[in-house]
Length: 205
DNA sequence: TGAGTGATTGACT
DNA sequence: GTCAATCACTCAT
Image (cartoon, rainbow, N blue to C red; front, top):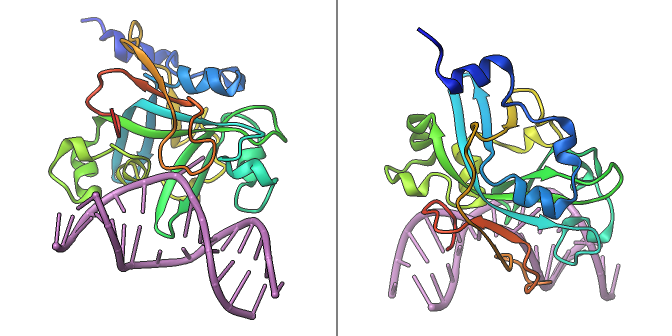
């Protein structure tokens, strides 16, 4: 009996993204990440969600943490592409970013929402909700659901317990919409938010 | 050194 | 719809 296609991909390592994937321009990466899978292998089990919403934060971008230069907090943003940038916001919520652009350039892509794929029971327990729609619909919700903390700041997302994998073969987001970003007070009109149009999993339609 | 702010969420009116 | 929670960081004394 032959393996399923998905299993074959996993077994061959084909779902792993090449490091160069993360080196593409930040805007293109923000779009390309839609449909990819965020995977976290934890001791309690494997947690997986499909990325359905992202926001780009660029150099020379007043809304970006990197705008005023490198600090201990945002140092990961200036690291090599394909790393994680995790920070604390409002004193209690953690947000997960994929670092992009060359080392020394402070750009990243914020992951705002996921479609839960695997480890749903663990996510429910971590989030304290029985509503599947509320598991990963928001940047701080998804970090809580997938057990992502500031301890993951700077980790390599190409390989390791926390990583990003390519979409299943043949999978493509139906339609991609581009909108202004959410929750910021500077550069509010720049259409740097990307989402899977019509997806019920995005933080705001 | 102290005040102000923030890439959010959930509880409450 | 409004608003509090809570702390790292920035900026102005």
